[in-house]
Length: 206
Figure (cartoon, rainbow, N blue to C red):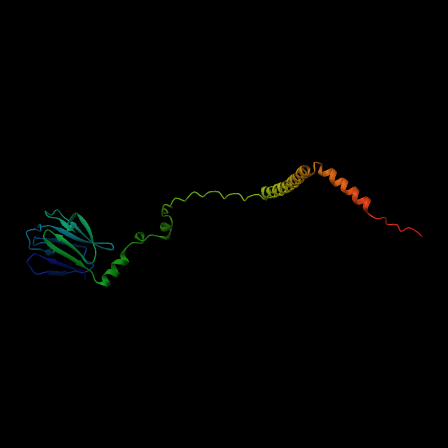
């Protein structure tokens, strides 16, 4: 059976038990209450504990000092096993056995249990802002590489030609300073002398 323990300051705690079938239990200083509390901080008609579907609730019925939970005053509060309240300066402790908790849990309407559909329709959490990605750089074309290679090869050939011309001009100038004649003319004259000096390929007949 549900248990209520009433503790008046400087007095022994007084436990009360009652069946789950009790729909209403009145609490106050007056003798006509179901639970009579001998304390000046409790009103004659102070509170009423009601049996509701799936548990109990405690409601204030016009008391002077009210119902307090963690120092805050409430007109009505749902009772949970192990909860401790105060009626004026009096402690009110409420407990249920495991069997009673199981029986009360079976009384709760199915509407209180979130359905799968309700869970799926919850708004999704805000997504973190995505970083703006840069578009991928296009792959370098092979054409500029080929053109660069061709240009380099042409420059090398041109450099070799110019170097050969500069070398020939240098030889011509040097030869002209030493002999006072053209290098080309000297090459031609040398060729003529070589040709005249060469022996005849024919052998005379004796």
